Length: 386
View 1 (cartoon, rainbow, N blue to C red):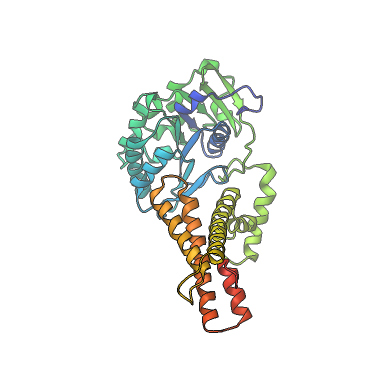
View 2: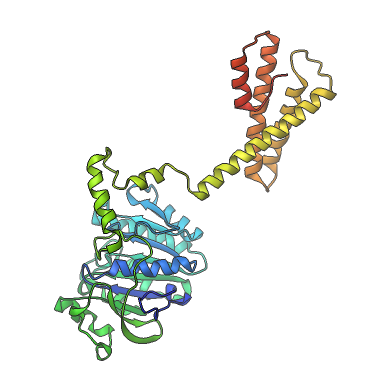
């Protein structure tokens, strides 16, 4: 695997625990390049937390997408992600810039206190909005702290910005790796002069094509490379992916014909209501546990009914047996440290069977004979009429 079309730039494990700056003006391919680097990391099993102010990182695999406006406890979210190593994209676009900064501050405080062992990479796009050079923001101190801390904590960070002149110089100077794309502003060029070896360059930054980057760091000599095509669909405005332009135009126009303001991609809307493999397996597991509990209860109930005489005339041996099974499974669920899910859903299945058995006992006592009702009870609980 490599990040450039010539397959020369391969990223090792340590890279994702280092500080990296990705700089290019709008349209230069900075977010696209970050996407390619993240794709490589995901394929190698690395973990990312992406702060996305422009929704440029949609469509990445293995990611949890969280709308910042829906988060009730930012500190709680930071703690959970730090301890579980979940790949997460936090969508900040719906918040004002001040609330975005406050969100990042609260998240990082909690995250750094609770981060578990192993490399995790934080990605902050539009970095100049969170840690600007000449302004104080709610999160600047926490963000700057990430760059000043040693690598022993295992936290890597990507600094992504189109305005290097506005980025906090402490953060920029602490980076180990630099990806510098097209910069036509003289001030922006001057801002990166201290971090690149211009004698090694074969082109001026202003002449770079979109997706062309000067790379320094990564334990190799500086050189200019062309970033490969992303394997996932880029969700930012630039650079345009020629292979998907027709799809974008298609969905843009079909939006006018389909009700619902969120129906930007009909296929994605259908996918939202269908379970993925993980969800399907989880639901199937619950169903199996439930059915297993019902089956065990039925076997026990029928055995007791055939072997034991019950003194209460209107209560069947099946009901007594299934009730005893339900109580035994519930006791196991409360006491045993193992197989909690199996015992919980098994208890639910056994309880349902017991309810069905009681219902049939009542119908038998009242001499009610309704085939439709019998069918409903049997289907809903698993119990059968005797």
